[in-house]
Length: 327
Image 1 (cartoon, rainbow, N blue to C red):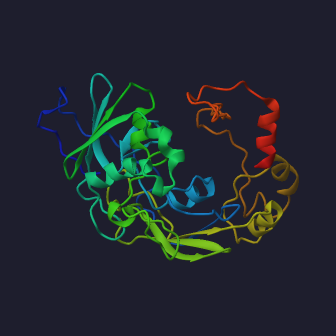
Image 2 (cartoon, helix red, strand yellow):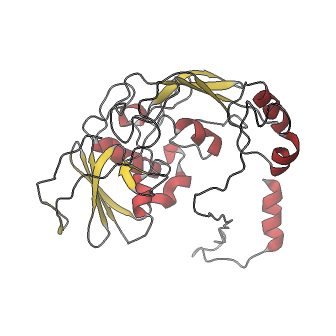
């Protein structure tokens, strides 16, 4: 990705001084010279209630819209280093409370309009507006104290406290996809199809409710010649089906109608994905995921709505079980 050789100015904001830093290093992935062709057929397992990157909390929706949106930065899956995406560089203050991102001036959304600092600010602040129905995203940004946009390509975010995941929350598309304010700025706006708009290498081509959503490679993708991005999006189209039954999905894999099946139950992998064409025309590989181990949890809000001070009420297994089965 094109970067300035050196940031020559000294930026002073909120009493914090930032020194110039060299451009971010890029480690190329894949084969940038590979042609753009063909269709990748995937299955989402179900049709999401909404594909909106603003408000959807469904993983199936994210699998589709992540092809069309980008974050400020991305983590190289081989080196685990932060690399440029929409931001060509960034700085962190010595106290780890202020994060400054410098946007690539070439970056633009699929409609050709430039990605600006106001889009970044909107992509964080909209969650506070109840009209967007995005309260589930609020915990990500409760430590954001302020967001400044000194110019169209500079964003400065001040945090309330140090936290080891601050950069990941602000920089990655998984937490903060950068969305066009001119498209999503009105929470009452209705979209005729799937409301997926971004700066990534793909955009929505066709959405057939109950059947599939087809994404097509954006011929004007701004990152097509950027060192860290030009290996992305080598399929002309990406087709997502909404098939719930695993056995049916497996049969479609055998017939070449689905190219990628994930997730798959271990029993299916060991007992059903056997014989022809597995091991010949279909690769069947058992591999260990290199991604660091994750954990999940369940949390209950025990604030008593009947008390004025909202103090927690004692944990009640009966009440909790009743709530669980009602959902």
